[in-house]
Image 1 (tube, helix red, strand yellow):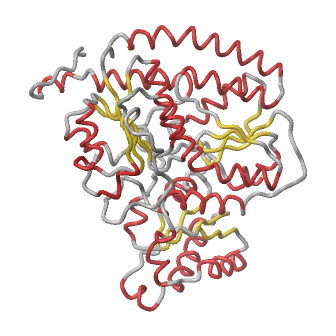
Image 2 (cartoon, one colour):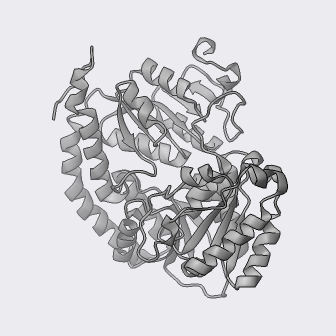
Image 3 (cartoon, helix red, strand yellow):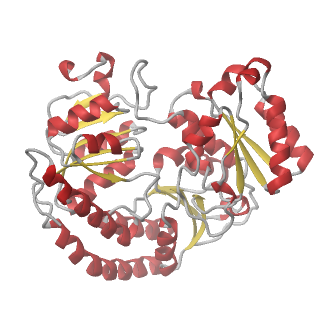
Length: 450
């Protein structure tokens, strides 16, 4: 392994199934000196909170931080569009020397005057952590002055990694929840879905068909008023465990709402999740309706999947995504498509998720945590991957290597969840993997041509 790595300290974060027995190291800060693909603390907080549609999201920091995360989720809204704006205090050198508190207060005043938001999230950034502006005191004073909710998000970069940002966002959401003592049967909250391309609406239609009410989505297409009713649900289901596992645990502890993990990526995980939800609610009628839905949709979708599957024989996939649970689902989804995953990694995967990944992949598969571009390039090439699934930061790397690419992160415009998502995914694998553009690369055999 030593010759394959630029930084020797990274060896514990990379393993090969079947060749190394020691468990992979994960859930740690990035190694100093490595340019990690993992986003920062502030970005982690922003991606969780940004889909709250009626909130003003004010970034207390340099303008680049706001620009970096402007409309980052690409989430769709059925109501307010205020969340699509990017607001910043645009801290300058003078503010770094003398403090940015007055500028933050003025920015909140201006936001209230122009947009009259019910809720403002104020994000701290690296530089705020350095100069020490008292975010809590400023937000508290502004909330009293304007009689609205102004919630500080403690996401300064130096307090940890992207997972710390997730936790900061969850702490901010917990401040919004208002227990009423009411519990609604067959009502669930959907955690860790951000309604990219309307995915939360697809899952809501499945649940409605089963006779189950979707109370609140955290945080896709959600509003401050919806979030306040979250404690009324009888069950939390969690898609993105990396970003909301902490929130689900706190809601169980504080409001006695149990939670289960679900995945709506691929045919098998979608069917299993619908069955798990009915079972967790103890609802036999919902279970019966789920079977009808699963049988109908599987009969409709499976022939389409089979058609694409025949095109992918012998192809190999590489995966580098944010959370471990998504990575696990993608291994299974590629199996449905007849493809082998030969390299897989995550930004924020946890020990138990890597254990599951290790149990699912074939011997020789490279597994890596918090990778950098050099590692991704080296192992994709070494493993002979034909396709990379990743996010916006991985796209240029794949194309420069002449490898097909699929965006499974924020920037995509079509849903990948549920049965419709399974077809979209298969179609996208086909269109990128079998594109005639690869015929222009020297020594490239990409098989079928569209």
